[in-house]
Image (tube, rainbow, N blue to C red):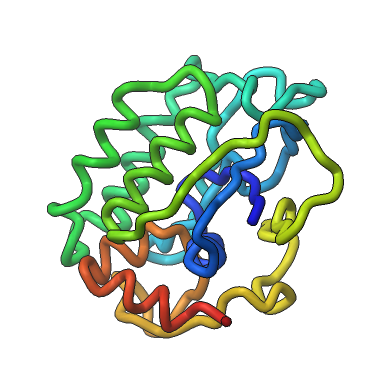
Length: 202
């Protein structure tokens, strides 16, 4: 399969990954604004909070692997503050938080590197092993092509990849599906992979 690289991806993204042995990450597409490449959704105390990573020259035609993160804005502190206030009291926050904090503290120059480090640690915590490779050129047509399918403007119900399985979340009585993987990891810990597998439409 081939897929674009997201920031702290959604459960739908991981449900997609679970269905394939080899994951090819698209590195040679042009960066797309207002996509999950630089944003994710978490559940705050009274609403869904969208965390967005500012980038340099996001309006230009730049390959996604070459997009740099903008650190002049203090977004790292804002994101970590939002994550802490959303999940600081979640059952598994203390077990997993440091893995993510260390990546943020490193401040990778490129969005692609930041996202790849976050994806790698998420897969490790989920105990999911996949063969991950990268494209070395852009091909318009590819087999098992999921590029652009998982998108903020497109409901997961349109994609036939992920079917929500409810689990206990940190806030609210109504279950919020398809948030960032952070929600599932911090709330469910070692049960996260099992819930993901149950959420995957074969």
